Image (cartoon, rainbow, N blue to C red; front, side, top):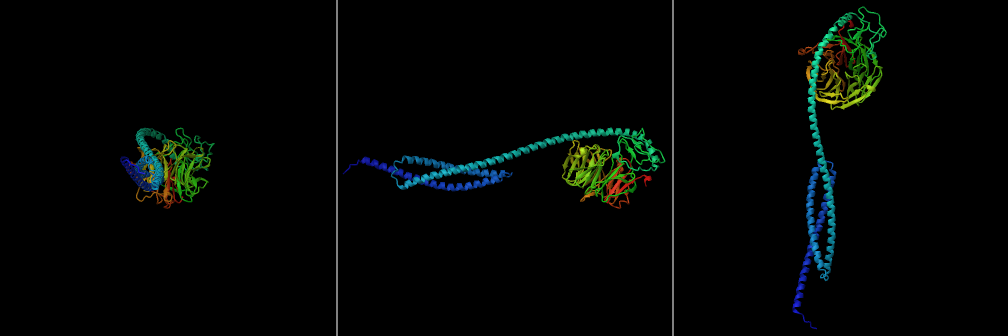
Length: 625
């Protein structure tokens, strides 16, 4: 059958077939582009896996170094890397968005060509399946990218926390700087207060000079009493059978015949209480008792030259010696053998031996200002206190041996000690004794000392420094710790009897220094004493020993034990001619280093002790020879 074909219709169908073929070729090109994009996505997936591992390692490293200050810098570098990675991720995201746009365009075109693609081959169907698989892969890649974004956000949050900590530390540092500035301002104000205090003390000194004239008038009243004492020096009194300790004496009671039986009368005057004076000499007694604890027996001191060995000695070295501060009627000594003796300085005999032997030895002894208690610094890490009833109390607080103890000259309930544990402890002797305050120092303190008012404590340290401590608030407050007065370890400190500002220090540089406290809250060296061949005598732990220094009651003579067994005495009466007196040599010390000496607060008596435990009394009374 012949069918007539319209030429125009035929050409129109041919044109449509050609356009359809062109569209088919265009679709084929789109599929090829998609396959290229798919391969790029696979490569990107591999790269993303590597990047994920790298981010995880970076995250682990950030967590490990989060506690360190330098991690801030490293985290900053990590943040830079993360920002670089984020830029790359943004590029990938842009590419993905471009691909998604292309896929959307391809999808729309494929939807429009669905009706015409039904006749396409199985290869085109396989391409559609590959396209669906590509969609799935892209979704998985997007999920991984989302996870990576979460990890990156966590890392960024950790970095922000680190930055906040860094800012907080900076804020704290600024607050500390502000606090330091405030403290500097307070120090300036305190220095001004100290300057005003010095001016006030200068005014007090002026008033003291005015009072000196009144004192001279009182001395004239003592002339008659001195004449009677000169008469008594010609008489040799018999000592009492039992030496009365200050602890058993009633402070306000005057002795009577009912209280003290009078021995057989001796030639010479028998003295009774005088209405014009505050002290009394008992009939047949060999000492004078100060009934109001305020009289001074010696107006001008001289160096005693006669030496007498005590009736007893310590088995080992004698480490400490002290006169009872009220009238010097008792001398206490402590030994390296752990014994403590109480002596009558007139008869030079032991009147009492404290029974308890301290393990490791006694390093120092001290009386309270009212003579009611005797304290001992012990190597068993304690401070022992003996009361008027003979009871012993053990104060604990040091973790190692105690090398020095000192009682306040103004308060009978206060004491201070230093130990081998680098601690300085302030004690209260009330209610059985307890620790008020403790302060640890960087360099060991070998000796401590109160000023006369009892409101300041000086401490001598290894290396040559002397520390100042304010104890008015019942605490150890550092007043000044920059007083490096000696070239070597400070081994001895003592306060002058009638001055609140003058102190005597001794060091291993073999110098004695007079220190003045009236210099802007610090110590100023005002006098220096030494002599050729002088070596300070010390006793103590492993070469870090200490010594006890002597000062005459009028403050004109300084006494220190020497390593050659002598006592060196310096006369500071004439300021322009400070001279070394003839050394005190005793055959009883036998060249053994003298490590402790003390001058009686009421007369011309000196007690010296050496490393062999020998105790020697020095005096100038011919009737006692």
